Figure 1 (cartoon, rainbow, N blue to C red):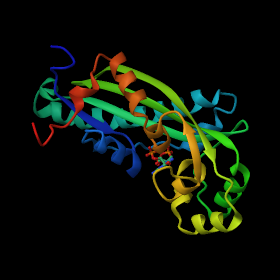
Figure 2: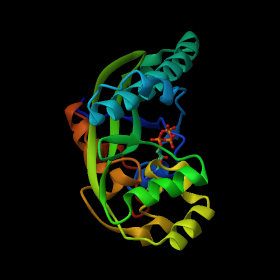
Figure 3: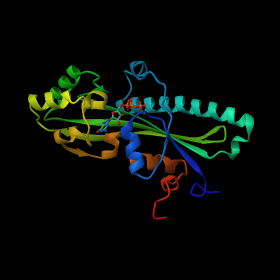
Figure 4: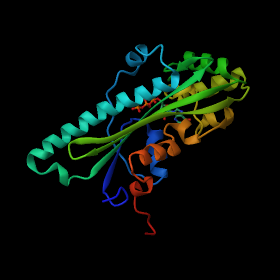
Length: 229
Ligand SMILES: Nc1nc2c(ncn2[C@@H]2O[C@H](COP(=O)(O)OP(=O)(O)OP(=O)(O)O)[C@@H](O)[C@H]2O)c(=O)[nH]1
């Protein structure tokens, strides 16, 4: 049986509504299983790591957490029937951070930090890094894993203080990496990007396609049936 013939269930190991929307708009209908990872603690142990490797390691840690949850589910199921009869699982996890002048930043979490972030980057450019991990589970075994990061140059417009205050007051930038959204109100203030827009929003479609191909899984075999089919 080739990768194109097998039945898969896609698992998005993320609480990110943006990642879910990107995947649904791109033809997948993932089940969400949120990872339980202390990202700040893990990041603290990776100070010396290359930034791209750091976000990839975070994505892999999220994958480890989600895989453990899924295998526990399956072990319970296997007690009552053969786990081999279950569909294969494709697990997707990510971690996004902004790299600016050598410093990685995640979500601001507060208005003050978001305002400071915008006043630093306005009129300048930075890289939005997203680490990706793809894992393939068959029965009770992880039969494949691949991971890599994607980098997109983001050019920030020369926004004025009033625009920054107005944007931050919406609350939108507080819980997104780099304190901006490309596909939301932040879009007014992004002068341009060089690279994959989906990776900026949270999950890079070309990167995931490439990682799936490494596991001999065509992304088209994961697509939901089209309404015209
Ligand atoms: N809508 C939108 N969200 C963005 C953008 N840039 C970053 N984000 C979000 O910022 C968040 C980055 O934080 P992460 O730690 O990678 O992910 P998370 O939201 O904590 O969710 P987990 O995957 O469960 O850790 C993600 O939810 C991204 O989707 C953007 O341009 N648009």
